[in-house]
Image (tube, rainbow, N blue to C red; front, side, top):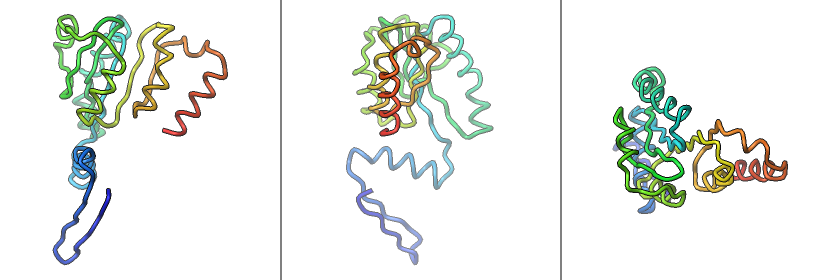
Length: 173
């Protein structure tokens, strides 16, 4: 915040933030002060056997996780190498139809811009591909506020210098 002012006698707190921080500030206040569940926004890349099963498991478990841990898991992006479907409110059981009928081509910059435009926080990109090319984008995701989870084993076969550079990027972000 740019300015934080607490007026004890009136029982209020005034916070001044820049315009692009209003949604984030509102979410933090609602979570920390009013006990609103913490939202975790998931972008799942690859929805074949492994990825599709993961989507189903997340959707089946989301209500229980919300009640037990006060974490609201929302699958906001589902993509493969060709198409991408986005939904800031989170996908439901009809996610397969949404991705099958999506007209949006998969583009990493569009996914990142969507997350920024909708002020999505606690972003997690889950790579369920076996793509040699896609693992090269992990740095860009981390630099733009995403955590990275991967079942893709290709990254482990890259040169050690790439891994060390990635660790440095993780430490900065």
